[in-house]
Length: 461
Image (cartoon, rainbow, N blue to C red; front, side, top):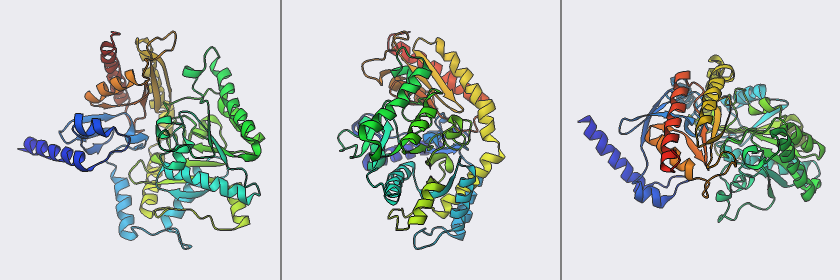
C-alpha cells in the first residue's frame, strides 16, 4: 500500500511540476515533455538525499555547493525555530537591527582575513555581488573619483544571476540574448592552464593570465576601473585552480593601479578549500569579499558582503545615504542559523579535517582516475575537485560540442544515484564537509563506472 501511495504521490508531484513549475537553468521543452518533469526529492540525511520513490542518492555536490554540514541537522533547524518564536522577522532599515544580525556581523569580522570588519547583508550570492557593484561605485564617488566605474572579471566566472551579477560573470549563455553584459563590465582570460596554457608551465601561464588583468586596466584607463572581482577557485566555471603565481600578481596589479580587489567566496568560503576562506589559501587580501551558500549550509537564504575598514571608514566619514538594500537584509532567523552553523563548523573541526584528512583522500582517489582513457587532468583543493574529460589526451582536445562527454557522464552518475555536476566536459565535486572516507570512495568509484559507460557510448571503450 505504501509503495502504491508513493507511486501516486510521485506521479502527482511530477505532474504539478510539469504544469506549474518553471525550474531555474532548464530546457523547458526537454524537462516538461521528454523527461516528464523533475525527480522529486523528499528527504535528506547526512550526505544522502531520498527521492519520492525511495531511492537513496549520494550528494557529491552538497546541494549547490552549499550544504557543508550535511542534511538533517537538528541544531540548525532548532536555531531557526527558536528565533522565529522570539522574533521571526524585522528589517534593518529605519535605524534598527536585531541581535542575531549584529552578533553574526561580529563573528564574520572575527573570521574574515585582513581588515574586513563590516558586513552588508543580502539573501544570495547574486544579491551580494550586485551590492558590490553599487557599493564600489558609491565608494569611489565618496573618494572623489566618480569616473572609476568599470569592473573586470574573467571568462567562465560565475558571480550570480541578477542583471549586474550576470554581467560581472563571464558565462556567455547567461548573457547572449539577454542584453548582457551591461555597460561597464569587462572580462579577461581565466587562469585555466589546461585549456589555455599551451606550452607554458602553469607558473608561467599564471603570470600571463594575471597580466591580462593589467592589460585590461591599461586599455580602459586606470582612472576608470573600480574593481577586479574573482573567485579564489572558479567553482561553477569548472573548478579552475589558479597557478600559485596568479593571485600574488593580480593583487600587485590591483594595488599598483588603485583598483579594488573583490574576492567572491560564495563557493570557497566556510571550509570548502580546507581553509575557512579561499583567500587564506592563496594569500589574497581583498577590499571586499562576498559570502553565501556555506554561511548557513543552505538551511536558510543568507549572504553577506564583507567590507574593509578603509572603505567603510570613507562612507562613514563622508556621509550620505547608501540608497540600496533588501527586505531581508540581515534576516534574524537566517542570521541565527548562520551563527549556529559556524559554531558547529568550529566544534566539529571540519576545516582542519577537510585540510588534513578528507581533502587529501579525495585528491589521492582522483589521481587514480588519470589512467582512464577519457581523463586528461584531475585537480582538487580541500573538498572541491574536477575531472577533465578529453577526446585526445596528448592534444588536450574535446569533442566539437564541449558538453558531449560531460552530459553523458553526468546522466550515468544520476542513473547510479550519485550526484555530480558537469561543466562543459568537466565533472566537478563539492560534497558536504561531513563526508566520510568510505563515501568519498563511493563517489570516485561511481564516477569511474560512469566514465566506463561514457567511453563505451562514445566508442572509446
